[in-house]
Length: 114
Ligand SMILES: [Zn+2]
Image (cartoon, rainbow, N blue to C red; front, side, top):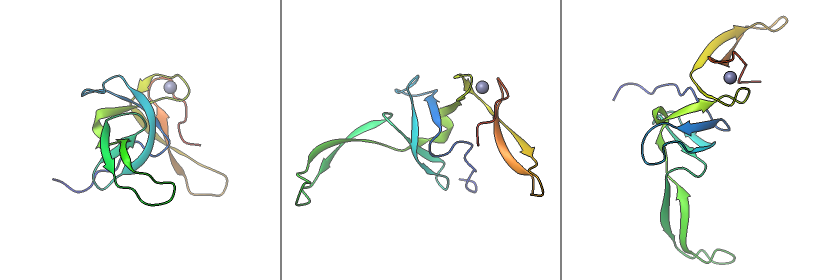
């Protein structure tokens, strides 16, 4: 595999799955692993795991947990137009500061980062 790719999505983004058995599901990114190009999306790729009892308040049993999926299987859902979109980047200059790279929606042009 090549060098780690920079993920275009990050923790807290709402994304929609575009391939695989969870296609069409929408959820928030709970964790991102840029080095592996993988993300964990709320309610997507659920797997059952056996949990050992860990003492007080942790009885164990079977729990359902999200598995990490490749980030290329999702598209960002624009918080503004609510459509699955590709991401554009632009630089925004703040007063007296270095230009900041922000992500914008390719469909409606809204800024995704704030
Ligand atoms: Zn948009």
